[in-house]
Image 1 (cartoon, rainbow, N blue to C red):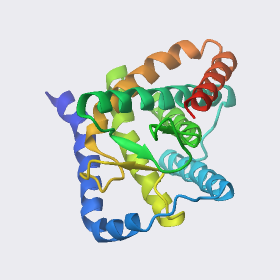
Image 2 (spheres, rainbow, N blue to C red):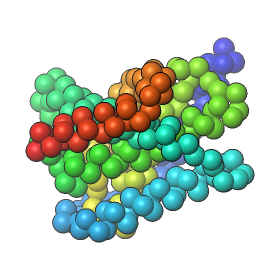
Image 3 (cartoon, helix red, strand yellow):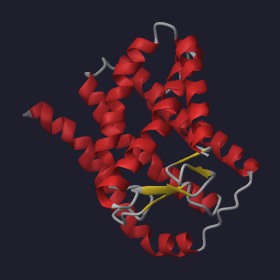
Length: 235
């Protein structure tokens, strides 16, 4: 019972903070979303993405109270794996939602492909998630680790928080939403309905990474090539 309560504390706290942020920002969000601009330059997206790399690294360095040490081979396989799981999972989940309810769960607003189910930019966005989850995994290892279910739960909760913050920052800095969620429960920046899919993706990531680490360069490259081909074919 104590373990279960500890596991539930993180999602309750994070979702509570996200809902509070949505409530506080609702007037601003409504106004900004009405005046978004889909014509974002590649240069702006590059600067935005590099800034996010700095934010993620800075966050974990502050958490660790020192600069994070990075194994580039291990990071490469995380980035490759997430860039593969992400776009393929997006098309699968959105197609499933369209089949079950008649409408998708979201649509991409930046460089959309495949009816807006995914995007040419999702390749970059999911690579950023891969960077985040690599550092998160390193942090878990340093504090004794967690089992696969606990880590997958953390991945799902923090994945929702990350896409909320990414969408919020793109709206503020680039005047565009990277993706627009149709359910309004979290200001159209993310939705709790995506949480189960994030948990499954997190579980798949945790299980897959153990096998990919046998040969990180090979599996990282294979994942990136398959992902790029998939996104290209969706266009």
